[in-house]
Length: 332
Ligand SMILES: CC(C)(COP(=O)(O)OP(=O)(O)OC[C@H]1O[C@@H](n2cnc3c(N)ncnc32)[C@H](O)[C@@H]1OP(=O)(O)O)[C@@H](O)C(=O)NCCC(=O)NCCS
Image 1 (tube, helix red, strand yellow):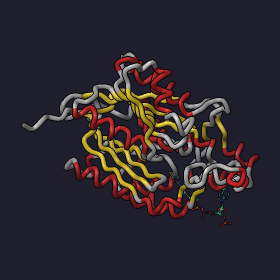
Image 2 (spheres, helix red, strand yellow):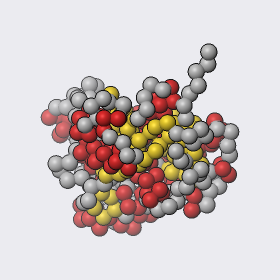
Image 3 (cartoon, helix red, strand yellow):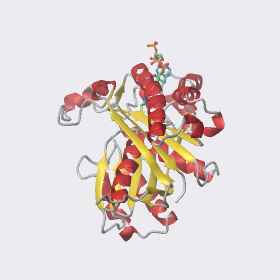
Image 4 (cartoon, rainbow, N blue to C red):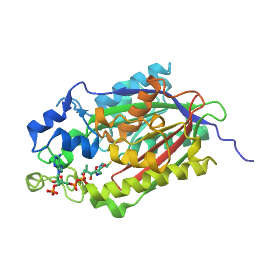
């Protein structure tokens, strides 16, 4: 007998953003760079940077706790905590276990998910499977990064791009026709060298030599990632629409990964969308990797730009290389 799957979707959202702001003027004091260069190449004006004592699980716990409160759920109702991150507190244990403990989510399973910037899209897609199958009722998905810890403070080419933040969502059963309609997840590991932290893992364990060579910091081939991003942002958005039998004209709100205004604009134009249908906040946060989509979604919601019944498409690209898109009928 065929078993009916449940509709599942995001029922609440929250964010945690460190209060300290580094503006482009601050970057001018650190590097041979200019506000004009940063704004014209990336659209970024400022980014939030965590204080030294703040780690991934601190921001993730704050965002998750607020998301649960907004959904009027107690921590012991949580079945699973997923933290999408490439900057966990430690390699072992997972950041998700630390969040589970600090939330008091005593019944919950917990794991980290490393899919780089599309991590939140991967995370809600995994959460949807558990909820749709009836395995779990309440999954907390957090996209959280402290990228300032892995961006090289001596490399103007990467350091100016990134910011720290967390965004959390609660995924639960929703009314028929609402919630996550479809996802597209992709990867191409042949592009791994384009965005990589060379040392500190089992390939090249940390040593005084790796530290001296600054191999524990992120290295990026910017133009290569740019080309890849422009291609997959459009392709993946169209594919996810096709999976739900919808067209680009049906999009009410596009929530693109906030890495670079030129990448966002190119996706917007290729999809034929007017500016008011695209969320942009890269100017104020920089690239917060897996936190970028939930922060943008939450901002859209709090600004009244997201309405019950809207078709929302989230789309992202990142290290791996990875990409992902999700189509949601907003509402619960
Ligand atoms: C990084 C990025 C903004 C660079 O823009 P670009 O137009 O491709 O610039 P280039 O890499 O060609 O660099 C142009 C010059 O600017 C210089 N430059 C780099 N960073 C600079 C900075 N912060 N300030 C001033 N000059 C800078 C470079 O050294 C280079 O100088 P050169 O020509 O003398 O060698 C762009 O490639 C990009 O956004 N790529 C995608 C990155 C991304 O999204 N990564 C995250 C993935 S999740």
